[in-house]
Image (tube, rainbow, N blue to C red):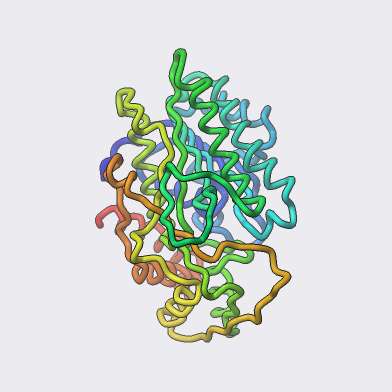
Length: 358
């Protein structure tokens, strides 16, 4: 991979490092030889990929809230990162209906705070801000959304991610594209991510695993919803590709933009197809469809991403088809369920190594 040596010995800050994607990114960065500092809330009670991999032993673990500008600024000042990956967020559509104000404060205000801290910290050369594929004004017409399409959002979560994109654009043009030293800023929008170590509430794979390990049927709320499912290592590889280009591209502005990272169009699947695939790989279990709930909050049923720009500009493309994605995901949870922490950690390291060989 073209970033194999790009992070060796570099100082990297990851916000949201205790979360699902953030922990996988931090683990991969450590394997690439980076000096990683993490800034995030403590993981919620219960198992987490961050704790299972014992990441506090291998990076500088700073607990804090991205709404706290002072703590962010102090962390950047002490860590002196060359590149920042901003992943800290309120990441669930359903939770955004319960706590809309907090969702906007974290996802929009938190992004402002990170960029403000970067603006006042010497030595930062690049920033990658992670938003979401849900930042688009999704009319559910089967259109594959490209980076030039309209931003929007029906629910507070989606709207907050669209607003975060506007924040990134404003800071890039107002502060980071002029003056010295110049900071190169990009944003990334990934499709639905699955993989080992996710225990989030009201998320498909964690719900499936909880049901399978307890011997209960998997009950699906929105079985016909279509999503761009991908293994967690897919978008993270994209973030690492882009970060390396921002660090070493000699000022080429083509990388200082938004990028989609998702599977090929023919790999998009319904919720029910993913759940039944996990049952088949697991070797037991059943799937049931929940009765329609007319009072349930709105969630999009159809979403496609156009990732041609990442292929054209970065040379990036997805490497795992949907069957391999489901198999790698089930493999991790089976290792955890059957053999515990050591087997799960070994599986995380092995999957990163296998992915790099693809």
